Length: 482
Image (cartoon, rainbow, N blue to C red):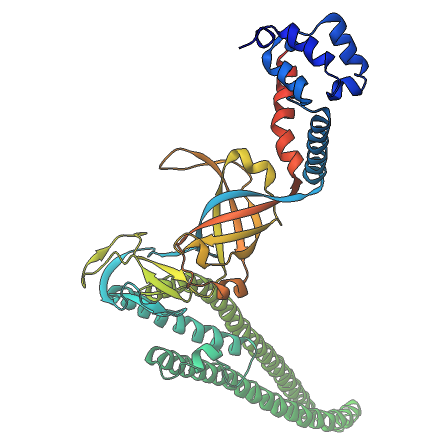
């Protein structure tokens, strides 16, 4: 190595004295002159000296400017994209497929002894189909006894109404005539018809007797009136004869006994007329009494009918209540399905076994109702979920890559926070309803109880919002704490 190679300053002098180098031909920039004037520590290094000798530098100013320009363009482009490109936001929740009206639990109000079990787990049943039949010996006996009493009271009511309205026949209600084949109904109708005819005949006979009595009295009055007329005629003749005899007696042309005899006959006839008139009065009084007795008979029967009708209707009301209750008990001996559905969770299996009042016997899962998703929301996400928001549903049992999401809509959100009974974790419940067309589009048949993942759309936000939101929240919290 030469002395020049070891001494950097000597290298600089040698480079400056060489006329063929570029630095000798081109004037150095002002900053380079300043560097030569005041000195640059980098120039003391062999690398820099070699670079200056060769005309190159480690970092070119043009390259640096180009780098900054590329960074600025990229940063600006990213900001424009981040500030304008929308990204759909969503709340993710786990859910369970269920039916719109929920599973129906089958119970019995009174309980009883099992007579027959007509279904098994997994059976599909129709609305009203008998599921379990209970023994009904006692309840049927009670119902039949009350029904017979009810039929009797209904027939009695119809008979009393006919008597009250003075009808010649009883108009029985349809609930009796429609059940004429029933022995109790037929016996009630027959008994009341017989009683109606006998009572009607008895009253008619009594009235007939009174009418005949009145007719006899009226005939008697007519006879007495005839006798009075005859006596009056005889009295007129006697009075005329008596005047003649009195004139003769005044002239002493006749004796006194003749006069007295005529006077006696006149008095007797007058007495007979008075007796006849009294008889007429008595007969008329008896006629009035007969009329009064007829009115009293009819009034007494009307009052009796009214009282009987009132009592009968009161008993009918009581019997109707008891009969309705008894028929309900008998009807409940056949436990029926309330909806079309599938039986699950059958809890009784023994014929002759006893079930308690209110004991759950089985569940019926409706098959005709809409399917909904009961989604469990984190309380931190509740402010982003509301009714009417669109949602997408993935079935957990199916590979997500092989299924398309089902579209739904949030129909309800629980008004208050709930607590999971098993884990104690708080949550809100959202109900996502699926259209029947969406259910039919599912790659696998949807069944109540299947797990699902629900993505509830919360609206579009830009990338810049997502990036800046945590920072702004942190700064806002920090400024509050400060």
